[in-house]
Length: 260
Image 1 (cartoon, rainbow, N blue to C red):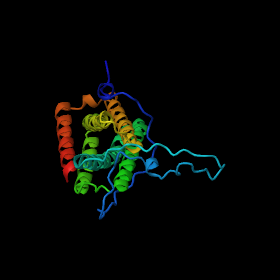
Image 2 (image 1 turned 120 degrees about the vertical axis):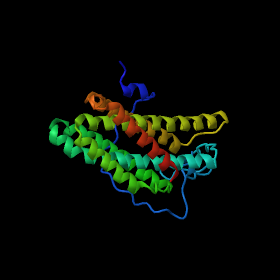
Image 3 (image 1 turned 90 degrees about the vertical axis):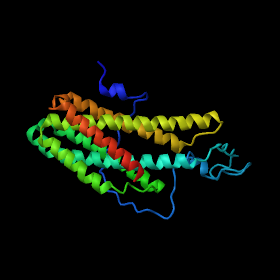
Image 4 (image 1 turned 60 degrees about the horizontal axis):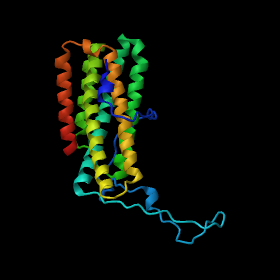
């Protein structure tokens, strides 16, 4: 039978994320914003004029053909800003859930320490990625991230004290919602790419890298879902009520964080 990971995963498996130490958000709202564009940094670098020579060997160089890039519309800018904001909030919450869950879980189940550390480290790397993207593109974080921090820590601790099954059911519920959320974002980005290409426009390297990043992070979140199911998440009682409540809370937090 296919695992939940296989059901939700799209094509193109990717490599694991680099393990980084998370840092808290300290991004102030700037006077101006740099939005993610379909332009690559390389394309923006002036090329030598026709007939120019290389300073290294004196050979004639041919300037690269400039990319034909379509500017982002206001609605596309809003979507990208919202996506980065909610993704950063979600990854912050995930690191806090695992931070709160780990002590009670490993106290009762010492053999789970490596698994809990592995999942935490991947979430910490995701958070570092979105922290960097928010800063780079001058997107403000959600105004409610202090509230989400308290709620995430409370959710992690409360499910952990209920036992391993409840803690894993929490991961199952959260990653089910997050996997679907990332899939939705990836679909919208691919639709944007298809539209540009149909109109004869190029797609910048920066935009393609964002899609690759979201796919990689999505795959790692779904890996956590598989781990949770393998470690008896569905034996939590009452499973339907616990996971249903957590999934509803995730959907609400996503909706609010996209806007506030």
